[in-house]
Length: 295
Image (tube, rainbow, N blue to C red; front, side):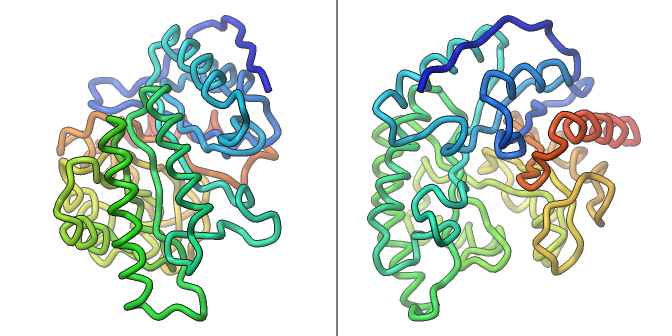
């Protein structure tokens, strides 16, 4: 696979005075080539990319994956964009079972290989972080067993990331063994509080499962926050919605990010909206600006 990029007109969409960058997740553009993703996002005013490894944009297991990452980094340097690497591809490792194997499956070697490869690619991209999560417990694994396996495997992932100079953003996910920011912080503490272990927070997840809501979750992550995903949700329902269609207080979330001095990427995360990707990206940018102006 090769990636060819064309020059595009620079969009204008940063939030005035905001400490963080607005981005968009490539998994919301499943029907676009990667160069077209960058083109549409630039035209829509975004200034950062959240790159989900896998089909159709950058196959991490391809022989030329690192070369493709280097070409992408060159294009992003032209734009002045930061990037984060996301590892939430649904069927990359198993064509029949979504997301599996995970870090809490009994056989997680393929997941470990994928995460090491993601770290290699992130090093080439000079990415802010590699975002990852625990996984849902299989039926044959108890919570105690799952936590033990997760802790042991994360020790290896953290060691590999630290040696590569890459930060990790551990993401709490509804329904997974690590479901809340408090769970992620506990895992980090049990690992010895390694410097490579940061936190990813999905704003919609805060609506769905965080006991104290989005403001408390962001403040709990504090200076460990290395990645933010932006979407809306309803309480108790893990379904990514366009901004304004759920219960997220987007103004409070953006204000909190600014108040805590977050300087990373806040990227829209709508992986089921590829059918209208350019329209959703444009509407999301409008929602972000209106929420910021309402502070």
